[in-house]
Image (tube, rainbow, N blue to C red; front, side, top):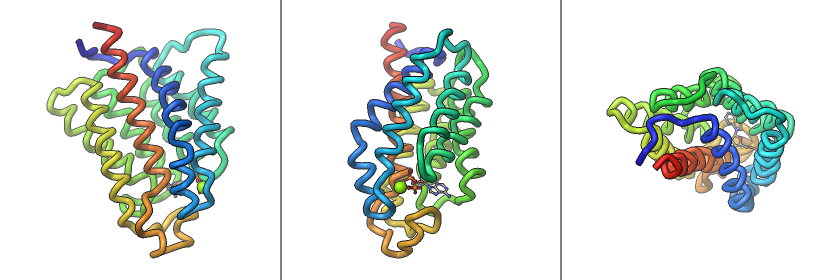
Length: 220
Ligand code: ADP
Ligand code: MG
C-alpha cells in the first residue's frame, strides 16, 4: 500500500539514501566535473552528505518536524561542502526546511518542498534555466511534481515524476553551453558533457523517491 503522507522518518531515510547514492556515484560525478570543472564535485558531495548522516545520528533527540531534518542537512552541507555546490545545496535545503515545518508532507507538501529547493538555488546562484547548472534538474523536477500532484498522485508518485524529470533535464544539459560557475570558463567546449550539479540533483531526488517507496512498504 502506498502512504499518503511522508514523515520525519522519511526525511531521515532520504538523507541516508542520498549519502549512499552519492557515494556510489562519486567517481562519475567527479568525472563530469573533471571534464568541465575542477573534478571535485563527487568528493564534495560525498563528504557533505556523509557529514549530514553523522550529524543526524549524533542528535540527542529525534527531530520533530520534516523541516528540522532539512535544516540540519542545510547547515551541515554549507559548512562541509567546498565549492559552489555547498552554498547552493545549503540554500536549497534551508528554503525547503522553512517550507516544511510540519510533521508530515502530503503530495502538495512535496511540491512545495521541491519548489523551495528550486527557488533557493535560483536566488543563491542567479542562474536561469538553460545555463547548464543544477537548476536544469531542479526546475523540470518541480514542474513535473506540480503537474502530477494536481492530478491527485501520491507523494511517492510525485517524487517518481520529479526524479525522472531531473534525470531527463540532466541529460539535456549535455547539449548546453555553460554560462555559470567554473564550466563557463570553457564556453562552447562545455558542450557534450552533462552538468555535474544537475547529475547530483537527479540522485538527490531519486533518493527521495526511493525513501518514499520504502516508507510505503513499511506501512503495508
Ligand atoms: P565548484 O564548481 O566550485 O568546484 P562543485 O564542483 O561542487 O563546485 O559544483 C559544481 C556545480 O555547481 C555545477 O555543476 C553546477 O551545477 C553548480 N553551479 C555552479 N554555479 C552555479 C550557479 N551560479 N547556479 C546554479 N548552479 C551552479
Ligand atoms: Mg568542482
